[in-house]
Length: 114
Image 1: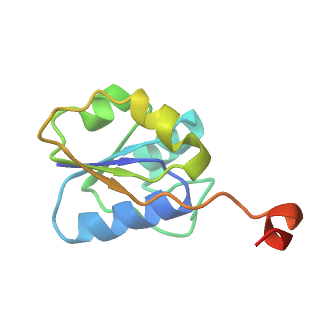
Image 2: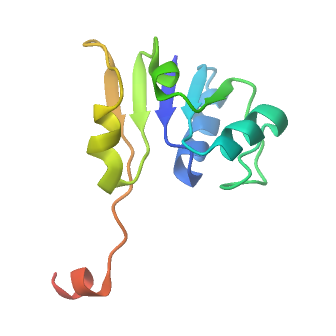
C-alpha cells in the first residue's frame, strides 16, 4: 500500500496516477470536506473537482491511519510544512519515504536576491 500525505492538486493527481497502476492508495487530507468529497463522490471538491478518483484511493483525515502498513509514503505537502508533517507521521524503519513536495512560492524579494 502507498500512502500519499497531502491532498492538494499535486497529491490528488499523484494518487490518481498511482491507483491506475493497481496499487492501493491511502490519501491523507487535513481538510474534512476533501475527505468527505472523495468518500461520497470520488472527487476532491477543493482541488481538481473535475477528476474522478479511482476506487483504489481511500481518503482519510487521520495521518496515522493513512500511513499504517504503508510500504511507501509519498509526502506531497508544501515544502515549508514538510518537516513538521513528517515529524507527526509514525514511520517504520523499513518504510520508503518519497518527497514530492513543491517549493514555497517565490516572493518578489526572493526573486530579486538570486
